[in-house]
Amino acid sequence: MSDTFGTPNGERIDQIIEKLHQLKEIRQQLVNAPISEPGVWIHQYEVRKQYKKGGEIYWYVYAKWQANEPIFKRNPKARLKGIVKRGNNPEYTCHQHIGRVGSSTGLGTDPLVTEAYREWENRKQLDAVDKALEQIEFALIGVMPEQTNKA
Image (cartoon, rainbow, N blue to C red; front, side):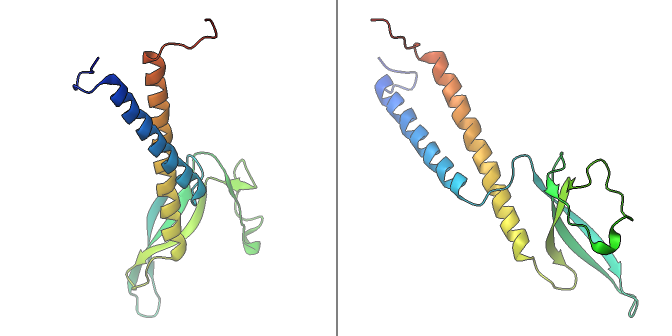
C-alpha cells in the first residue's frame, strides 16, 4: 500500500522515525548547551547621554533580560538601599541588565551580550524542537492503533 506521495507506507514510516531520531539528537545537543530560562527574552534599549565638557550627546544601546514574572535576583547598590522602591518583591525583579550592544563612541558589544543572545537562540530552538516532537507524537496517536495486551 502507498501513501498519497507514491511512497510505500513502511518507507514513509521509516523516514518519520529517522526524522524523530534527528530531532531528539538536536534536542539533546541543545539541552547540553548554554540556554536561557524558559519564558525570558532580550530587550534592547537606547540611552542618550550629554557630557558636560563638550556638550556632545552620545548614545548607547544596552540589552537586558526580561520576564513576565520576577525571576532575576536583585543586586541593589548599597547607596540606593531604602531609597529605591522594590515593588511587591524585594528579592527578585522582572529584568536583569546584560550589557552594552553598541554606542556612538565606538565601544562594541560586551561579550556577555553575545553569550546571552546565543543562550536565547538555543532556548528558542529547543522550544521549537519540543513543539515539533509534541505535534508529531499527537499526530501518531491519531493514526497508530492503540496497543493493548490482549491477544
